[in-house]
Length: 126
Image (cartoon, rainbow, N blue to C red; front, side, top):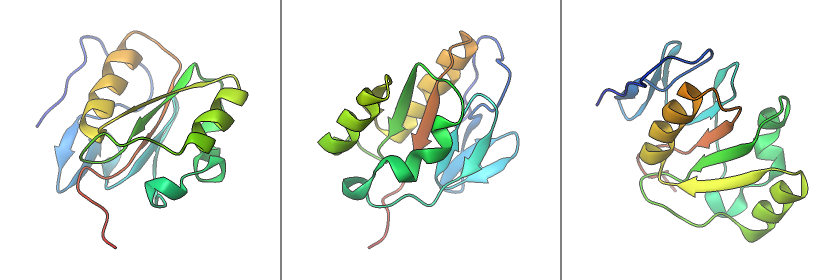
């Protein structure tokens, strides 16, 4: 599948899905952290263990909120994580990873300052 935004924002964009991962200008990533400046490979913990430390690179730049792609289906992030992110003055929007990748492109096309953590589009083993 190929994704295209109406207009191209500066920084990384998810261009589509390939080989079980997210395709960006820089390559294909199974799991991904995105800021307005960089796409970085990510080795995420199980969702129920996700915490601020696992998302630390996303806090380096100011953002309005964090998109959380929870994998092949929408899952609820840990309540403690949601509260911790809100305590930092940010929102957290969870959705399945395909939807989060598409939302990233639309929101970046609008010039929004966001960050994203995308779990693999296929289920994590183990």
